[in-house]
Amino acid sequence: MISIICSPVLILLIVAVIVLVSILYEISTVLHINAATGTAQATSKNKVAVDKFGITEIYPTKPNGGREWYINMSSPLNDKSFSLSGGSEKTSNSSLANATSSNGQIIKQPDGSYQVYGVRKTGKYDFSARMNVNASDTDIAQWWKNIEMTGYTKVLSASSIDAALDWYARGRMHSSSSPCEGIAYHAGLRADGSVYWQKEIWHTGGYTDFRSNITATQSLLGRWVGFKAIMYNINNDSAVRLQTYLDANATNHWRKVADVVDNGGWYADTPNDLFYSANCGRSKDYVVTNPGPIATFRSDNMIWDFKDLSIREIQAPSDVKGSTVKQFTANASSSYNPYVFGNATQQWVDKEHNIRILFTPSPEYPSVGNLTQLSFNLQDLKTGSSIKNVTATVTVINNSTANIGTGISKGTANGDFSIFKNIAAPNGNFSVKQRFLQTGTHQIIARINSKNNIFSALASFDVIVLSPR
Image 1 (tube, rainbow, N blue to C red):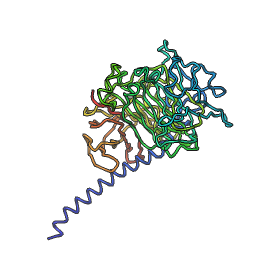
Image 2: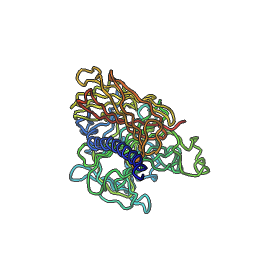
Image 3: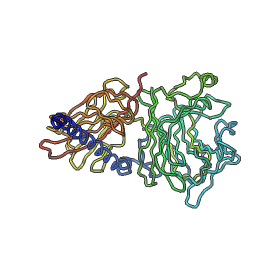
Image 4: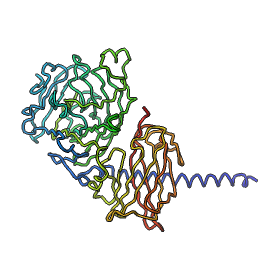
């Protein structure tokens, strides 16, 4: 009698275990792909361009007049567009053409790099340093907007737990005498290896909380690390995408460690009476889509060496046409194209199986709660013709939410996901529909199985989901 009662339960348990094993296999395989290609996707092998210093570019410089600035490694202060200051105490010279702090200095090192020794200020802003790259006050076309800031740093000492490199742009001077000019997105890299993004709507009562505030590498003390801060407008200039890349071993192998979208809802964390006291005419969640004439390499509470600093006005990825995809084919046998065309038209190349997989979400920037179509196109890598008679499995992994709207959802310690199985693609094209229920970056995994299971290929893509406006 007992065996009869337990038998159905046992069967259900077996079925559940089989399903769970299948799901975990999909995820473990995906994680293996990410581990194998997480650094490779941003290496110099996968790029078609490097900058003046030979450093891999994540995004190309904007054509037809895109501004590029490179530190003068022979004599930085001979560059009239570059200046060193120690914070808000230097505000009398608006152009900052030759301004230097009375105590702050940069000192050339035996290896050709420079050491930043900031202004001594007791408290939060000790060893304060601001290395500013300035554009003309009147030529707005030369102001910093969609940019990639790059440099190599070695932290020698840090006098507080929150000591950080802080690279920012899209504003003017940050001083209490002109509070509304102090507007920016701040990319932070702390001495302990953690990163963050923060928004400043006015100086100093318009700071938000941190986003993507995570540990990205080990301590920076005593070693060279590459740091990239990237910001560009998306969604018809109504939102901003913010990315951080690190070259943790200073080998020109870049890995994306933070990816944030600001399309509103990221509020200043000061009380209303304080926030609106500056009379800047901005909302508490103002999206900083505007350009600014000053971009700054900042530090507080640390002494550090630097080399090969640069800022480039990049071509906004949403402006890149689909035909450009062919330029960025990776050399690895199976790898993700690190150049993301907004959310649209991403590709994965698998040379082992001679496959190119193109992925396009529609709409390009889906909002929470709306149905999104995820479309795939399979091509022969050599001929460009469609690959026929295949089946596919698509897994949608949510990076932080516990609710996925469609498909088969299962919860795990790593977040919930949906799986769409046995999708027929007789002509090499297929799609699924997904309703995302949280903002952020979601991972899309496609497993392609050929007829008679001759081969099986995996590909991974990202979709950025915005909050509704």
